[in-house]
Image 1 (cartoon, rainbow, N blue to C red):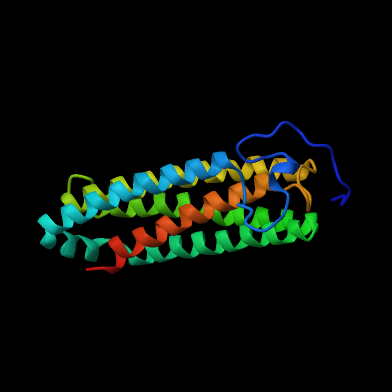
Image 2 (spheres, rainbow, N blue to C red; image 1 turned 60 degrees about the vertical axis):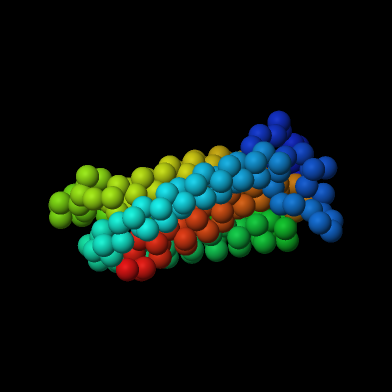
Amino acid sequence: MSESNTAHTQPGLFDSPAASIHRGKGRIPGNTGIWVGITCEFVEFALLFCVYFVARAHFPESFETGASQLSKLAGTVITLLMVTSSYCIACAVIEIRRDQRRRSLLWLIGGMLLALGYPVAKLLEFRWNLAHGITGESGIFFTVYYYLTLTHMVHAIWGILGMFWVIFRHLTGGYSARDHGGLEALASYWHATDIIWLVIFPFFYVLV
């Protein structure tokens, strides 16, 4: 891939003008739009976690027995996919800051492929649950479990769609060492989604 600079195109959620991402002390990665989205995501899940704790306080036995019925292997695989995907995307940001565009793109593609494994693993987990008679009507624990994990998967799918767009922009020379706000925005959103999963994982698969 060429290392030469290219002209800027109209910015969107995963893009920003070069001036807005000028490097300096106190600079926030990405753009304002993505951080509004991340804030809304955190608020949404904070409310859902409150529901989790209220339900757990009222139905402790259901949560103790419910967690033991879930596939810890599935939860662990998803966790590894999310963490390694986030690592790859972080490496993509590091490489573009060094103006290593080809390396950045390869890391980004690797991160996307790992991220695609998450919805696949989650759907296989749901299939396993249904085969074992675990549905949203199997008890309050499973109602909360399905609602939280499905909501998280929706946010993850938004992030994966964002990866496709950022890869397209990368392939067309949209990012450089000086202008890579779109890639940083994607990384910020994906790391936020990863953090939320790291909270969900122990709530349902570990804490019994």
